Amino acid sequence: MLIQYRNDYEKIAMGLLSFVPDLKNLEHLKTEMNWFTQSDQRPMYLWRSENEHFIGIVCLEIGSNFVLVRRLSFTPTERTGRNIFGLLTAVHNMYPDKKIIGTLATQPIITNWGKTLNG
Image (cartoon, rainbow, N blue to C red; front, side, top):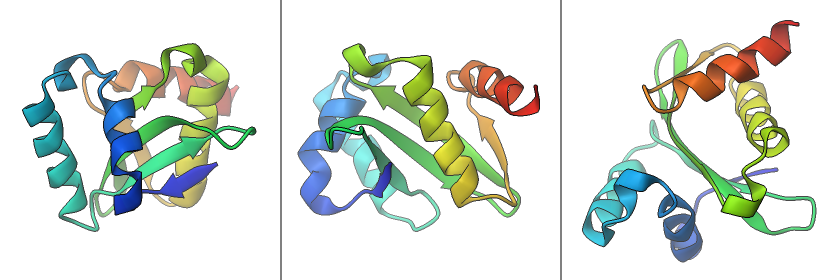
């Protein structure tokens, strides 16, 4: 289940984002977090598992006709196709009139997810 980020989830969000290789540096991680929290057009959502634990995070950028998945991260034990595709499907359901696209890092995952929608 997608849960919108709020300030009391900061440590959880930072922990999940720290699994992204280029966000290992604490200062870079803080800068990234600030960038996403400064605009309504850049929401962050945490992914909560069926047993109520936060296991993933997605950072988006919302455009007029697209949703760009900028960051996508899961705990190592929960980094499964089922969880990733479930999160992307929830994002798609939240923004049904917009195309889900990715960065160089996230597009391969989105392409594979898209294949499951179409076939």
